[in-house]
Image 1 (spheres, chains in turn brown, blue, yellow, green):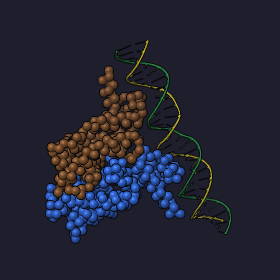
Image 2: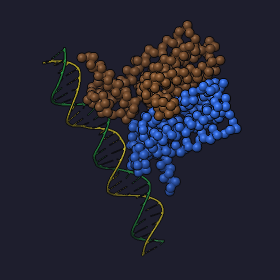
Image 3: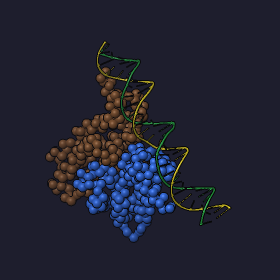
Image 4: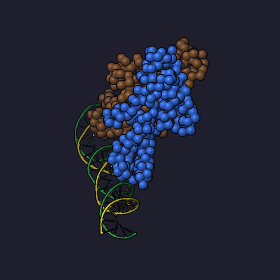
Length: 209
Length: 209
DNA sequence: TTACATTAATCAATCGTTTGATTAACTTTG
DNA sequence: CAAAGTTAATCAAACGATTGATTAATGTAA
C-alpha cells in the first residue's frame, strides 16, 4: 500500500533525525541508522539515494513544517509591537522547544559553515523567521514603543542564542536550571514557562522607553 | 632540541584544533590533519597515542589556559556587583571572542551530550566560569543592587548563548550584523565592542531596580 | 506476469592504527 | 678523541576494520 510506504519512509526519517542529532552526520553510519530503524541497509539508498540524500530529506521534511508559522504577525495593525513581540516569544518557545532534537541537529549543521545547497536552504529558512522578528522591532522603534537606539541584530541573537544554549548543551543547562532538560515532562511544565517568562521580562526592560 | 619538539607538537595541536572545529571529530581524518600540519601520519599516534588522544590534547592545552581567568572577581569587596558584572562582560568578551575557533569546537562537543571523561572535564571547566558569574549575581541581589526576582540561570544562559549564536553560526550572524564575522579585523573593531556594549545595556536594564 | 519492495552478499574506498626500517643526535666506553 | 652503543624522531608501506554504495536474487501484491 502507498500508505505503508509513506509511513515507512517517515519512520526512517524519524530515526535518522534522532541518530544524526546524537552522533552528527559523519558519526552516524548507515548501518546504525538502518539497524535502529529495523530496515535493511539498502533501503536507505533505495528510498533516499544516498546517505546525504537521507540527511537532506530529514531537513526537507522539517523545513516544510516550519514554513507557515511565525508569519503574517508583522502585518497585523490591530495590536502594538510589544504585543507582537510577546506573541512571537510564545510561538517561538512552543515550536522550537518541542523540536529540540531537530534544533540541535540544525544548529550543529549551521556551525559547520559549509557552502552547500543544504546550508543555504537552512539559512534562508531561518532568515524568514528572523525577518519577521526584525520587522516587529523596526515597527516598535518607528511608532515610539521601543527605544530608538536598540541593537536589533543583537536582540535577535539574544533570543535565538539563549534558547540554543539551553537546548543544545543540556549538560550545562540541566545543573544550571536544577532540573533535567532531557525530560519531556520537565520541558513542558518548567522549561517552556521559564524561557517564555524570562525572554519577555528581559526584552521588555531593554526595549521599552 | 627540546624546543623544536614542543613547537612541533604545538603546531600539530594548532592545526588539529582548526580542522576539528571545521569538520568535527568524525569528519576530520588523521590523514587530513597530518597532511595540513605537514607531518607524517604516524606522528600523530607517536605523539598523542591515538586520534582521540589528539582530540583530548587539543582541549587539555586550552583548559589550562582558561584556568586562572575570570577568577577572584567575586571576592573583591571594593567594587559593587554591577561593576563586577561589567568587568566580567569585558573579560569574557575579550577572551572568548579571541578563541572563536576553539569555542565552536568546544560547544559542538558539548552538544554531543556524551558521558566521556572529556565531556565531564569540559563541563567542570565551564562551570567554574559560570560559578563566578553566579556569585556576582547573588551578591547583587543580596545588597539590593539587583532586583530580587531575577532569573539567575537564564541570565547566564543569555550571556553565553548570545555569544555562542554569533560565534558558532557566522552564516546567520554575518548577514544579520552586516559585516563578516570570520574577518579577524571586523571581530576586533566592530564585533567585540558591539557584544560588550549590548550585553551591558541588556543586563543593566534587566538586573537593576 | 509485471512492477515494486526487500534481502543477503559483495564492492571499492577510506578509516585509524601499526609496523619495520632509517636517520640524526646524544652517551658511553676504550 | 674516536668508536660503539643508545635513544627519540621520522618515514613509507601495509594492516584489518568499517564505511557508503551496489548488485543480483528473492518476495510480494496487483
